[in-house]
Length: 317
View 1: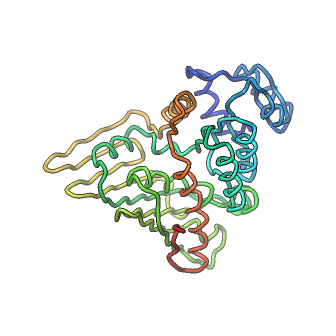
View 2: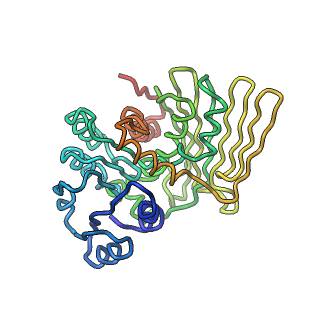
């Protein structure tokens, strides 16, 4: 796939980054394949994904197709002996998730699988993690996401999966990274309005509970005002606090000391995540464990279940 995100974020980075050899690009149409093939200097172009999966010269596949196609392509790539980077989400339903687990286990974890959870690779998020260490903590993550109309493909549960599956997975992963845990239970509630121009679930509050006593609270809002920065994270622990404003300014409070870091340019971790994936392929050590990826994806499905049933749901067992 070579949509706008792939062309703007992924391919320019892979083209200039050491360790990547761009062999074949596959898109739905020949016009797009030729255009991107020339621009990013791929050796081959195709409209048939099997050409990539069956090519022994290719050891790694980037899956950046529409969301409903992620799961099947990931499973196929693993079964064909390829490392896989898939843009979020990993998949859009439990059946796809179970098939990916089966494919991964069939290969005994030989092939690296990484989802595009880039926030954990942001230098400022990693600086928080290094400062707070491993201890019970609370993460408050607020996202001023903006409206996506109901007729846009991402809102179609059969194609895009909706915004909890398609985007909230980012923020669950960030909470997991900061706590060093995967959630053991989730609960969620949403704004309910007569105006259904956007789904109720697009304005949602989520509580993640972790085995070590940590909590993650995600407040994701479609309603709001675009003049407010999109993402704001606060972290609290014993004699520690952190504030991260839209990946541009970080303030750490530790003991009697306060430190502030400002960035000229917003860095959400894209460069670092591709370097981490490259290194994982080389070393065999995953940048994000499969269990972490699985738990994050399962949590998105469970959030929807919690909204439907108005209850806390365990992720264990």
